[in-house]
Image (cartoon, rainbow, N blue to C red; front, side, top):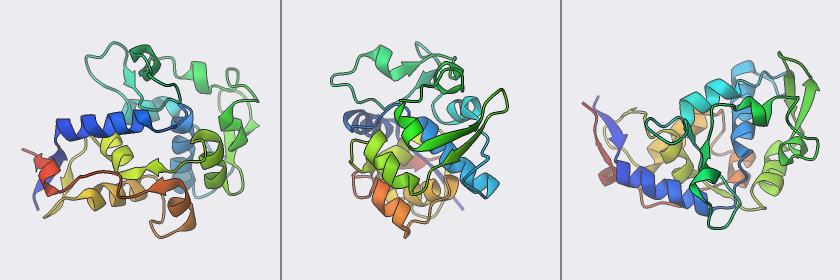
Length: 200
């Protein structure tokens, strides 16, 4: 089966669409915990591998800093707002995060220390939309395009649905479920088969 990757110009457009959306920078941490619920099969006593998460989805080679994160609620954000340094623990370590943080409205720190444990609160997807997205839905096609910019897809005919279904599998969502429908907006991009190119 042929493999495809997204064209860089498409990824760039999706990146800026995310920057323009009112997504708090701590949404990255929430998405990491959401992924852990599927890996660990529960919503409490979760590990929080934020360093590995940032390495996988946000690392950009030859950048000013290692991580380029398209989540900000600032208007006209500067480059320094979007580029993150290697010290992710400075944001997400239990000793660094504040109780007033928007993430703490969505998740609970159950055990402190180096091997901290976290839990996602009841109806956390509703809380995430309220506290991390200003009540707005997240453009899922753009989000998946950016997160999977370095991934290839085995398919006969790639499309926006290729990205959405890959996102649902990667982050353990049911596309037809209430959590996905509440938090994410589909149809936010113009991604078609022409948005991809063959991967050699």
